Image (cartoon, rainbow, N blue to C red; front, side):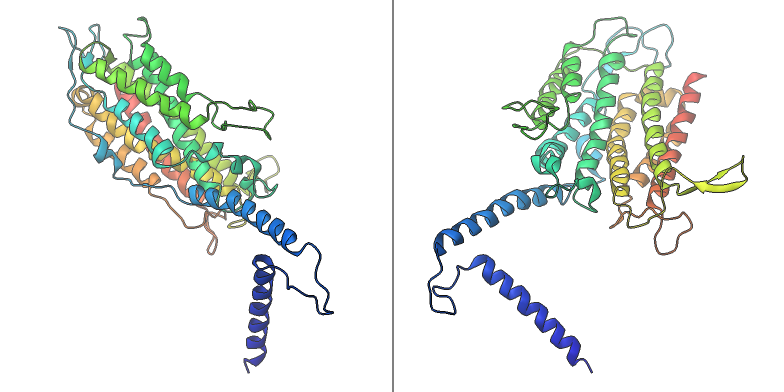
Length: 391
């Protein structure tokens, strides 16, 4: 009964074997008619050269882009240390009154920034700038493929969070009430992280970037490590400022709230295949789709948001230590715990295949909506903390 199926499988294996033999072995020394093939070894050498070039192009990219190495939600515990912040002034008012709350001692936020930069550029290769990422799969944009674009999207998400926090450090936290001179090390770190994310050593196929040789994106980001560490070393010696007041914490959370709101909005728009139109009292096509597993760009949206919440998972725990006095005085421990829990729950979402189906779908779920809801729960906690800090 299974003989036709077995014969079919045998024919498939025979065809594959013949193809591989023709690909990797030279042609026979003589044709069936007894004549010798012309340029037999030269043709074989050219064929092997082409195969090796293809392998050299695709294998390193697969190695770097397949997995996010050292993805571990316990990473904050590897970085954070008990806060050593002490007052840099005689008067301390963490509640944000007239006196300052300038502190010295290593900033946990800065240490977390350093760890995440190393995670992006040393533990992992910086995939968005690799030429294979920009050229695509033999002309097909990786964003239109189902898997090997995920790591680049995740890294972009982490980078967005690092950029946001670097701006807050330079413009708010590293100076007194925004009126003193900005710290040069924090300014330099911010500038390094703002560098374009898709520049490689050479960019011959990218007219928007210098041909080269030039400094690649990953090296620019690594340059921020030294400036962040120099700031923390000076802060430890009370030769720099970290203004840990309630209004600065509120500003810090406001910026993160805005970022997470944008991420949730992008996820929601992509996941809405149909929407209700009050004017016509009917459901009409939405901005997104309900293609389920066949929306090959859904994973980009999902992994970019995942990168953001993965970074904020550590950065918010670091902020808790740097602003420990504010959180204690304002009684924010319980709600801060809920916020950290919701961020961690969002960062723990890891479907094998990202699906953009209907929210009530059975076979193809809506992972984008699930991520958006988790992000919005964390954002709601941040908004509540901001309201308390406003009182």
